[in-house]
Length: 331
Image (cartoon, rainbow, N blue to C red):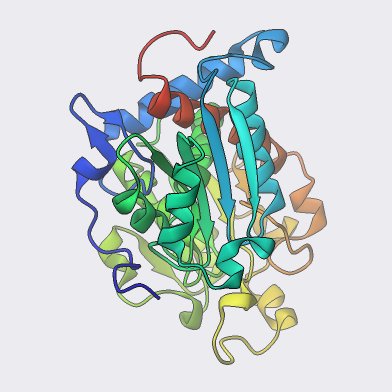
């Protein structure tokens, strides 16, 4: 691994130009409160467009977006692709399994070759934390980088589509109690959600899970820790379930999935401990019968499919703000 390929402190100026214009979108950590609302406001413009206009808002006509997915995620890649196409951009999906990086070419050499193909934006997903930041630091000045998930570090557009969904359903963040449940230790989504929720001044953010799956000292991020699911769910407005990420686990952090489901799986009985109008979220993919029962995932309080739909609007918003400017109508 390149010695600089790690997510160190990120200067705000690396993501933002004067006037809070987005240059890159690498993490929500440290971004201003108003900018997060600006992203959601812009996404709202796309959501409320008439159906015909939603299909084509050509703000990025003539631009080229390259999806660099070094780690598989069909759903995330497709939503980025749809978002870019609806904005009128040309989209190129790089098959990393057959690319020169798989044959030994360095990451930086690959970036240089892609720059020579007149790219305007790289959407990067990689198993190693810090990769998107590394590419942003060493790419040509005219290229913007959007982080689609890097290791355990960050997944900023997922966090923002989750915030947008919460705002749609609940309005202001300040009165809310939000619980994030499950494998927080290995979840880049959870970290980005916590940064976004605390920046948006959410009333209370809880993390719930076994001690082996909760990061040490996570309280410093402004959250309350619960190891008992029933206690942690009591009177919350929003429940965000996380999947077990066994592919990132080293050693026996859990006795079994069955035991985890018994202690930390969300079922209808446990959902009754939350507020009567609470909503249930999940960044996907879902492990039905492990972290969440099918009855809850498909139930009336679930907004999981709405999260997927909102993902396109939020990614359109971020791309438009980076390459098309922060102001102006979405039409």
